Length: 232
View 1 (cartoon, helix red, strand yellow):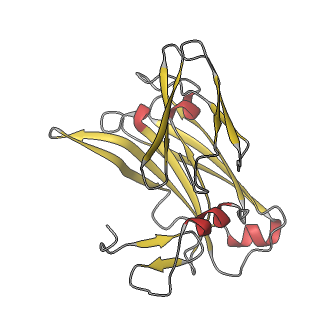
View 2 (cartoon, one colour):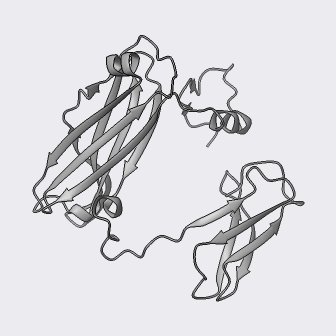
View 3 (cartoon, helix red, strand yellow):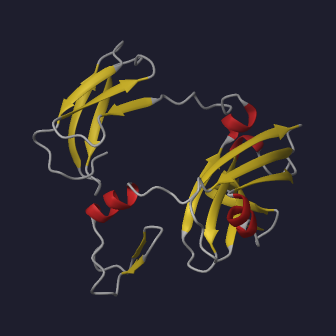
């Protein structure tokens, strides 16, 4: 894989595979994850009559001084799976709302420190399955192409009900983060059957696996034998 052309974009700099000086690694990823975003964004919405999505997007700089470059809000309607001619296709962009040019929010952010945008998207239920729709919004510096913030809203949040045929997600709390000697995992509900917890390195290597018995919802794991890396 190391011989395959690649690039890494961390939201601030693009590291190309053919640049010998570009040494991007896991510590860079960890440090980038600690950077506060320039803006906060909240996306709310509602599915109306099964064929219309009404959206409200609020962006706040929290006092951050924004650059003079054009700042654009892009909103996409994505269908997460589409079956066509016997093949399953994933994450199909159905529409950029209101269009591919996005929405210029530079002046509002610089002058007011915040902006609220309301949008509507009408679609044909015969062509697009509402329960597969996700709304993706991101804010981008049009000059540097840095993405300042991203949010996604799926069917559950648009309707207030679980997606048909899909069980409600199991919420997981993991602490402390970062961890040194141990981590504790707490599930939002007890497991119905004996389950297996698997620990992977960021490269995809299975490092360990443990059992969580039926009725349990907490688990503590010692980290003494693990290297100081990112694990999943």
